[in-house]
Image (cartoon, rainbow, N blue to C red):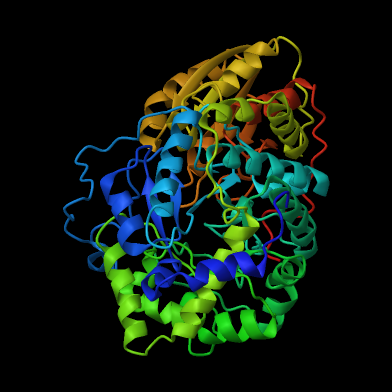
Length: 582
């Protein structure tokens, strides 16, 4: 990293002046959705001494993954506290400038440094690429998902993109990122990992994850490998239920744990656990987050890891279906976890904190274990430069200029150009003739409609094709019902154009709308399918030509349009069949 490596003295100095309650607080990271320092967030800093926040500037408040009737719903439902924000209206947080958001994070940091032992906060987020992009204020640029970067065949591109992501986050004061994804996606029906994984080949994952770690280090952000011991062979989404992964112990070690061994050796500062069951590693079939054989036995002792071990979002469906949240938190610490990610912005924050404090006072958790966890978290903060006296404060006036440096857009544009894959082109339709008359049928992506700026918006693919000299008309839809409504128009227009270019979108947790696109591909008019995902839950056999830029954002649509017009010869190539189990 650019920052000095952490010194035992700086960490020890903080530990020596911290109370037990303050050390327990360093085992917790809470959620902060929004762009203003609300009283409940300031209260959590002062009362629970929280280590940091998982931030989401576009949401007003973190919403739990569970819906009424889901197993465990009652375990996360709480009446509002006096200082808690209560939103009856469902809408997003107001868009603010990068400088304004930096001011908000500075305010939270100042509150922490003025409270108790004055331990600086850290701020973390997800920024994997594709739909996993939790910051998009002015200057934040999209990047391809890891699978696209690996398809480029160039690890240096993965390093450059990680450094870009780190620079963008650090500009506003975010210094911890929940990447790289180390899952080896060996099952084509995995609904949660998919293109978030670099590859079904562990050696490819290792090569690109190591380069990504270099990039994050270069930018000065803490990288987090996830989801240990590996969620690549799952066919369930743990946001909503419990997943059991029945890979043999031999295969877990040979395939899924290989990236962790390599990155631990390279100095990976943090690892996030999977809320999944691995019966061949822990025969008790306990969820990995609460499994001492997995956390302490495998990761700490067998693999020799001494960095931060953290949980995934703690109120995901599988975990809370089995345990009350405070009890699960205690069990995770008993298993060897250092840091609990509790994003729900409700009374659970205080309940979990008090539960941990009382567990130490009763002797169920040892003070030595708490101190070790706090030491590891403080060491990571030191690695990010947070213990150097500045507390991580950033210059709000410089934030926007740092984000809009020309090299940032150059890197993002190059990443999409070099990551776009032609999955197949059976009839050698590519490139289309200049000036061809096209019908563009766009499935509106949740991300593009949420961002709704020049970086991502409905109609971006049509605009890119128009700019490249095509005669392109647009039809869009968001749901299968809307598709049925426009289907007669698509059928009629298909007879009037040279080709149909249709865009499909998939995000974990959503329904893949495969059937509408299969219907388009079944028309007699030649068609080109553009998608952010190559897997068969979206791509059908009827599709003769498929282009995958691994994102729905504008730069991705421009890269796809360059393939369609012949400007980009699409050097990226998947070294595997997305329909095959590995």
